[in-house]
Length: 459
Image (tube, rainbow, N blue to C red; front, side, top):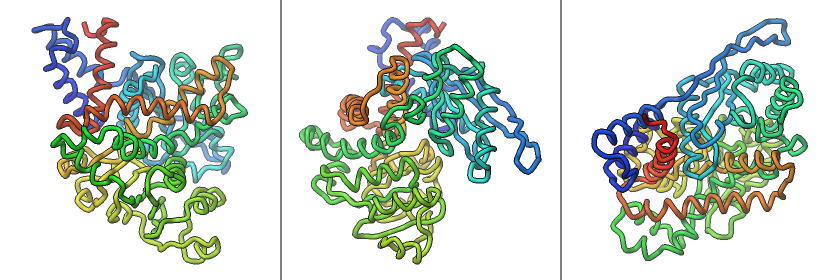
């Protein structure tokens, strides 16, 4: 489990141990032993499944591809988490992401535990036939660990509804006659998926920013103005101020968040920069996000990389190196690419006052501490990017009931779920010295600890 996650879990447990109103049944030596048990339980996964998928490539070669399925904790319900196809996947990374899923579901009161999968492969370098075989083999190798009431995968980096459709079909063939709709989420609509699922994470990421700077600021201005909390001062500085937003990553999460910002009527904001694995585009007057989205849909997800491509599609922007987006002089930076993007070596170059984690763990522990000391706000992954798992839960329920909601109903339900969480967390955050990430972890750990205690798992 990554240092940042495990350390914040331990810090949260230290805070709760000193709060005698929490689990008052535990006192003295028994309290110390119980909290030591909680540290051990929450900082380690229940299971780590690892296998080497045997894949016959179209060129006739046979390769063995490392793959993982980590099941962190299921105290609150079946394991739940995406499957990542990427050449940088590592076992420790998958373990950390599974732990984050446990905490995320606990924070948002979603009745799932935490899981995560990974395959060390670059999907851009595989044919469709090879990817299909990888998906089938993944389900075959891990079939004993998966199921709608056991462990429910979903898309992640490098996977989409296509891969989930393939995997569900393989699960169905392996277990004929058994319920299969809820075995995977993030599927296509035709295969029992939910309307709004693909856009859910990006919409949730932008909603977390919009809610804080619009609705919460307006509804709780007296709280924000009456406290010496340094983070409250940061939010108040943006009242009625036009915002410049930069978005790192222009995939499913980043592009949807960009569209939400482009069409938003609640905040005066414009997206001045976006980046992907190849390039950064910048326009101080605001980018034409709808045109960029159309372009990427027609070009394998990639942004324009030269003046000719920009001119051909009427896109006004200057071209820069993609890493420059982190140091732009903007108000808000949305991180929607991969983990560990802001670290000790570049954190002091970051000028944005609000950072939104659309990706999982894009800020290292060292950088996180420095940013918090500067009074900048990080809306953490555990809070901001939960839209995907929340709508996955709705999809899981719809599959069990075989009754499906409209997209507007799903997005309304998503926003209500996230709003409920933020209404609980933000007043506490702006009233105490802990950063927002720590506040979220304390609540998650509190809920998990209570359930584990009630289930008799601490003895």
